[in-house]
Length: 283
Image 1 (cartoon, rainbow, N blue to C red):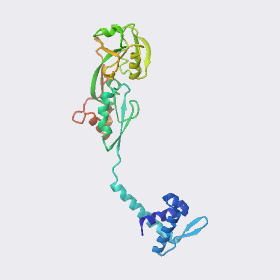
Image 2: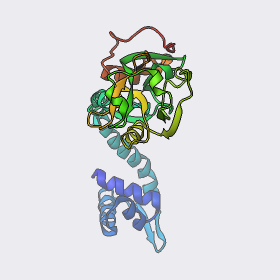
Image 3: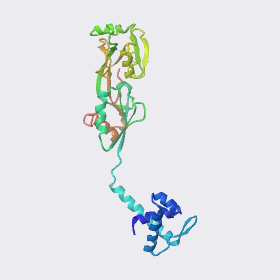
Image 4: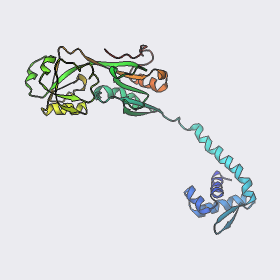
């Protein structure tokens, strides 16, 4: 008696039809009929009465079904003993204004891990942890810093201000400016002592730089966001002490979860280097 014959028997019994059983098992009807005939010979009993509408199970089939179901289920369960464990899932949120050159090396250990499936979502979507600026961290979150960077003024390639090695906030007065939708320090820069002349609002840092390069105006953005191959000219603002601190934010209640541990480990922030302080908004 073969396990294959018992599987075919279960299909015929449960569907009440040789034709339906053949479809379920993805084989031909003659193969099902031959297997049932072989099983009946071996058992010395008639299992099904055939008629035009299908088959009817006999008392012998009723008795066999319970034992056959158990044998087949037990055989299938053996496979799970040796099946690889399902990959763990980690969901990481990313704020839009992150620079790829810094984030990509952080993602590589996660994407190359064979026992892990990484999902990337927006920073405000449900996730295990997120890479954001400290100013975006909630009170219920812990924060592990990754890097800190200043802000620069990006100017069109031939703008006269490019000739000055350093600029000040006063140089922005009357200068056509491109605002960024994803500015994480908008509250800290709301009072510059003058009303900024906003000529465009960019949905992304890439768009902001493209508009600057096209001569639409200038923009203030984190220095790490500016690609090395861009034609825009960047200059520091001497009296702008504002910096952006970027790190991994995670719910303090989940600080000990495997997902958070994997993210912190990939970022080089294992348990030995994990900061104990809770998140506080930058002043």
